[in-house]
Picture 1: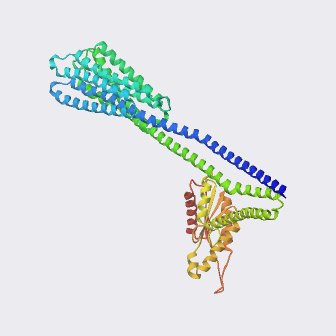
Picture 2: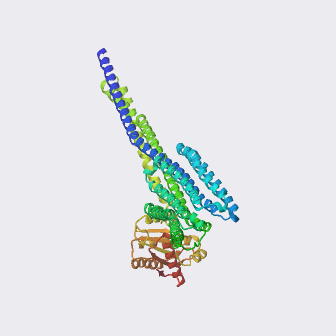
Picture 3: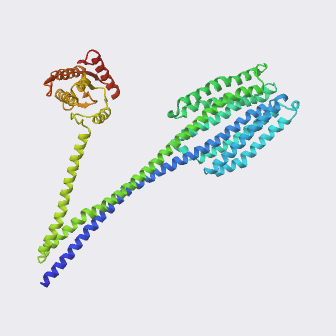
Length: 581
């Protein structure tokens, strides 16, 4: 007996060890699955986050570029009021000096704003250069301009005027160096945004070259002197440079950005600057070469040219705004993608963990307990009866629960099917209702051919109100039921019959020709006409007729239904009890 108990104890210990091994294997499987999800999810999360960071960086970089470009444009624009003030007659000098001071204030404000933007976006070194070098260079150029303006009108010379203009050119050249420096530091220039950056820089250069075309000959024109070879060469060179840059703009511009607005602005540059502005300068160069009097003064030349080359800046501003909007949209999508990827990964991981915990508690643990009971039963003869009872209870409870669950699921499926049938059926006739029709139409419209080969037959009971008023609603219901029965008798089981209104039915048939559809409609009409409704209370027979409209194919359901309805109305107008298509 003692030996038997020892054997039983060892058997139980062995059973426990085997159960622990099964639990350990289950835990190992859980760990493998969790790590598999992490292995898939983490790279996706990292990649989506990196895309978000890249697009976010691109937004800050293009904002910084836009600020620096605006500074370049304002510096370039300052040359117009500067030239106008320097070429002014004493009578309008004060007015033009005031306009120059106002524009200088705008330029200074723009430089300060650019410095702030660059610092905020991580370009501190370029911001420092603007503060330290650009402002100093601009102050020096303005000082030379002011010295020239303060000279008595009789003491001024074309050479001094031209020297002041060149000093303003040098300021823009300094700012262009900072644009180059910014482009070496930005990372987005190597991405799909590179074309935008190149277009913006090309237009910035073109806008400045456009302004220099007239400025290079401003001094001799103002003093009514022959244009020197140096000035002529500079003007021709800037013309050639502007035309070359213009030829690049449309080539490097991405096709998707060539919107209606872009095309309009692009055409304005060609029409107003290239076709109208450059010929003004060319004519002045020819007049100088031929020893003729100039047809414009320096001030007039400035006024005429300013409106011409601002079209270049308008196009540039559009591309700046468009590119910023594009990268903002990309940034928004990248952020949404990151949030979505992160969320799905977390949900997947939690679902896997929850499923495994649930499976362990509700599935594997009961099975392990059942297995242990079986092993104990086989190894313990002394406790056979008690273990057998417990084992049966465990197994019966497990399989009974499984069978009960199967039954509940089956009942649920049957109830769902019944509820859907009730919801989609007309209570009186048993045919489909509008809810079923809506689902069917959604299915048809999703097919490649759409509703192009779909037929709708509209059946409307003639004088139905009279039947209801004369014999009551019970008889009216008998008429409606009879109509539904006749429709079922004349169409296929696969065709859809719908009670669309109180006395109106629809039949929807796929892939049918008009002749066949009209034949079906005529069969319905004649079949209904042959039926009699017995009025038991008065011993009377009544006969009803229907008007039918047929239509096949349309772009939309509403259009197809309207066509069929119009056909039915024509049948009514012709005296009823007619099929019209």
